[in-house]
Length: 319
Image (cartoon, rainbow, N blue to C red; front, side):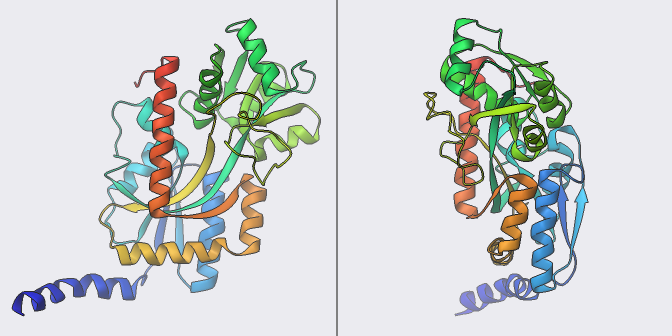
């Protein structure tokens, strides 16, 4: 009985903390500059949570160094639920492939709370290109190794790795041309500097409307409700291609489960709202998903293994 009483007392601070949570502002760390997909998705969801619950959030942008700055700050934060990391595919499924050492451990430093959204990437060529399908793109690359060029927001970006995945799955050799951001990479396609790029819908949309580029298909394993008319690479005869850009919330490892549950429930409720789903679709070309922490963790592990395999196939070595 004494042992049971002692155990009950030990649980009281955690239980009380969870009941009172939150009683102050929650800091949402974002590893990218204001205006990007991760930042805007964070503001849309936390804004709706605040509106529904009265909770107060402060979005803290810490851009730079492939997401290292923001993620490292979050990893060092007190695991009390008052610091969230809002991150995307790059920090958890690509950085571990590209870098030997990192200022955080994606697996040991964090607990996934919820995947907020998932967005396809579009395979885009110049409007005047004679290539009209993914199948034709891969056939051209196969016939003329390394003559097909592709732009990306930079080496080690998820867009870069998705393009490498496409090449590896098709068994072709292509030439990577890195740019300083996704927008310049799409412009490079529109001006015929490179053959194609892989990019999110928001960055491509203005060039589509101006009839400077055309879309060959998408990189996800299944057709996306965001762009249902575009075929997948798998439909076009390139098996195993499944790459997207997700955004999700994480907390420092050691955060009480009861607090994580509160964060998940509040976020999931926000994602049910039609206005939130519409804003995520418009701003990020993304589908609201509300994936649970356990399923989110499995998705991260699957993505990580996929990009590790791609890196080995194409000869990318961590720096």
